[in-house]
Amino acid sequence: TCTAWTSTTPRTWRRSAVSSPRPWAASRSPGPATVADEGTPEPAGPARPFRIVAVTSCPTGIAHTYMAAESLENAGREAGVEVVVETQGSAGFTRLDPEVVAAADGVILAHDVAVREKDRFAGKPTVDTGVKAAINRPGELIREVRDKAARGEVAAASPDATRSPDATPVERGGEPGEGYGTKLRTWLMSGVSYMVPFVAAGGLLIALGFAIGGYEINKAPSVMDHFVWTQADSWGALLFQIGGVAFAFLVPVLAGYIAYGMADRPGLVPGFVGGSIALTIDAGFLGGLAAGLISGAVVLAIQRIRIPKALRGIMPVVVIPLISAAVVGFLMFVVIGKPIASAQSAMTDWLSGLSGANAILLGALLGLMMCFDLGGPVNKVAYTFATAGIAVASPSDSAMKIMAAVMAAGMVPPLAMALATTVRGRLFNAAERENGKAAWVLGASFISEGAIPFAAADPLRVIPASMAGGAVTGALSMAFGATLRAPHGGIFVVPLIGNPLLYLVAVAAGVAVTAALVIVLKGLRRAAPGAAAQGPDGADPSAPAPGEKQPVAA
Image (tube, rainbow, N blue to C red; front, top):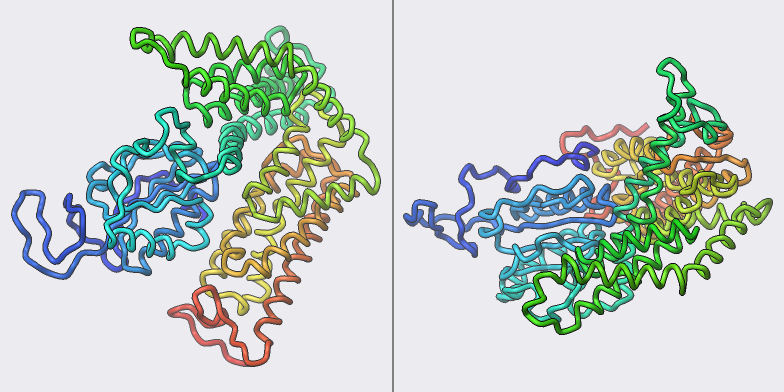
């Protein structure tokens, strides 16, 4: 449910049937007898359930993080395993109780960004995987960690014992054999995850400023010099200028946290400096990406130099920030800044010149990307491309059309799944019908991840159908000339959209296409000769849920 995705309440141990009133003892392995906190042996009895602690995190820390947590908890209840999950989301995280970690029999780390304080779980059987694995196949992960526990496989006592002492947070956070292609994606997603809140806050404030004060509000004087409490224009100017300040952090934050993902805290100073220089020289979003990667690389190179013991104390405070900021500043100002600024300008000119068939094709392509992995890396590339275009003081009309097309397409999959479960509920099992109710809200809020439960259960039908609807919506949005200055908000920012009625028509068309395709494809599966319709758990999707009455044939 939606409430489970936004809850920050610390989780407690949950048994699949009835929760035990006793807290966990600090025993490490299940057995017929345990030792109580007072040190007296408990009577022998049924073996206690296997206990797992888990951590989930995703680049944006919004939807995948909490969906993975809920999926693991549900799979744990089905398997008779006690699961406690720590969600390291965008709202921060509440650390698992050390006693709970100590009493756990296994650990599942489902993450696309580095797990914070990972060393807490050293010495336990551990499964380390991506966050989508916890959403799509939680039962397999639980079986894998139980198998590791049975074989006695545990994580190294020191997380870095088997790796270079200079390993980056990402290298410490993943498997030892991961390639740098995977690490590069994680570094970039680390920067994007910290950037998105600035994009959302700044973009929405700017859009509200335009809505209240009109499209000339960007020419208003500073509210420090002129602000009248009773004038709407003054309030519009205030919101616009606050949003502009928030947007100004976008590129430095992107660069700073890319460098942080590579080199930990020492990467922040050169990253922020390089990102600010990228803004100064009009290198924009591309300059921020380059500055972040260069900053991380420079810090890693400095850290590999052997330093006398007497100087190590001042390295992180003085030497590394000084040298890395100077090197990155030199490279950005003198060496690579101008070529990157030229590339950024060329991309901006290309976007501004898009019209007619080219614009429609771009809208269709962006729609396909938004619906391909429903919040995954390809989705984030399309979204980041759109937000980069509007992350300037005066974005072009083409950039705002691209933003409108991206948001419209991202709303299609969950809304379509919600519609399909409403129109032909007997094609879906009880859990999917329940997820369909939440998908109405998620789709309206531009949270594409609301369709993931459906895609995970039936990817060969849901994903192609979603991509078809997304392409239709993206193309229609561009053809209708709908514009959007806000980078998020879904249906709730429709008053801020140019050509809002046609924009809603584009969304409705895509939703209808996707819902129709899903219904047809699932109907064909049911009608296949000799094949019984099955849900993801092998059950008939049309079967009533426990407690439901069997439908009467017409």
